[in-house]
Image (cartoon, rainbow, N blue to C red; front, side, top):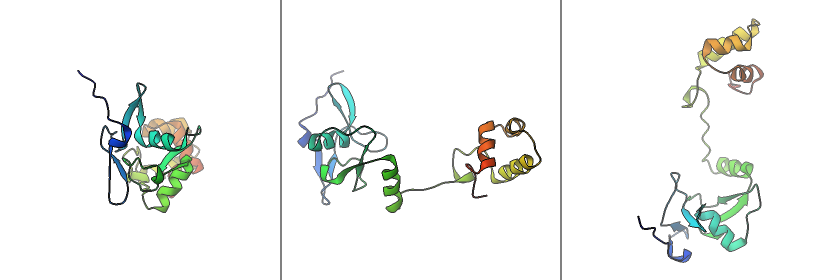
Length: 152
């Protein structure tokens, strides 16, 4: 299999009407551009940031003002923490919270959580409750202290 070399970076994107530089080559499942630099796979927007501004400080993310994952326009990018990213998503209405049974990874129903709380109030051990509902004792503890299912 022949490995295809990318053209120069400036030829790897298309400029849109809103001045996004949309990456035209490999993309991750979530739409972010991918490329190889010195044999290492990189996110195209992070590479674009480094080309324009230098190294990304440890612990920081490269975020999009335009909310367009394949965009590599350095003018649309900014640095931030994970908290900055969450706040940005929430302010732009892109943060979708899916608590409780609506969450596809939920192991319990609302009815089961209420039953767990009753058992906890009766002094039943976390481990016993966890075995009955096929969950971890940690989840039972999280329910007890309000770190899980706190809105109930």
